[in-house]
Amino acid sequence: MAEQPKKVSNDTYEQELKHLQTELVKMQEWVKLKGLRVVVLFEGRDAAGKGGVIKRIIEKLNPRVCRVVALGVPTEKEKTQWYFQRYVSELPSAGEIVLFDRSWYNRAVVEHVMEFCDKNQYEEFMRTCPEFERMLIRSGILLIKYWFSVSDEVQDKRFKERVTTELKRWKFSPMDLQSRSRWAEYSKAKDAMFAYTDTKHSPWFVVNADNKKRARLNCIDHLLSIVPYESIEYPKIELPPINKEGYIRTPIDEQTFIPEIY
Image (cartoon, rainbow, N blue to C red; front, side, top):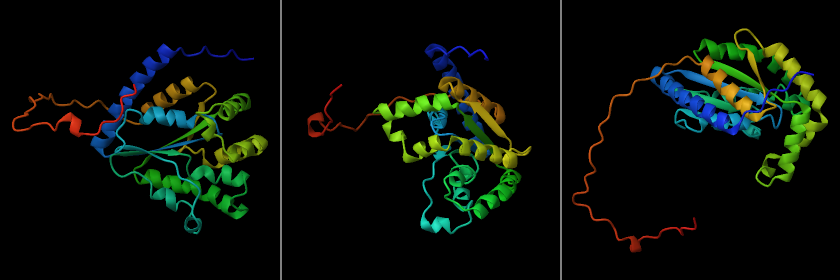
């Protein structure tokens, strides 16, 4: 049995996360300055920790530059459209970063396993997805794809936490039950997806997600290594004194303040 890596202490984790988030801010400013268009896909099994990584990425960033796309079930109208259509409308403009919390790959795994799409739709996706991504890359978009890999033991533990923890109960859905009973089918679907879409021009990067802290740090570090950026020198700013001349503040007792419970 391979030796398990040591746990990351809270102090080390917080220190490294602060450093990486500082670099993310630098990356964001470079993307904005140079008008880059960055798309990052986050895929993987339920409870693999995708959401936690996304939260740490966007925590210190400008939501006008970096935004998260987490599309729900397609509407009846969207079901009649070209499959990629609703994702195309979410792609970034110049100077933007878009993080997809699940993406067009829903069709290759969830929809396929759960039979939300038919065989022809599934096969058409597998044929056209590589070309679709080729088009995005040729248009100048930097496309990065992450698959979060989690063992069945760790997923089981996290599912139990979702069921028994009030703050996490909302995360558990009927789909989670299906993913447990169809573990092998999900695995086969993921392998088939990789066979078609893990290409030289658009590879999959796999994140070992059994340890949440390590997964977050490793994924952010890798993202920073993929997106080319440089630090921007900000001009020195002298803050002028606040000019209160001619202003009389409204009496506090004439305003409705919220109760100070804390």
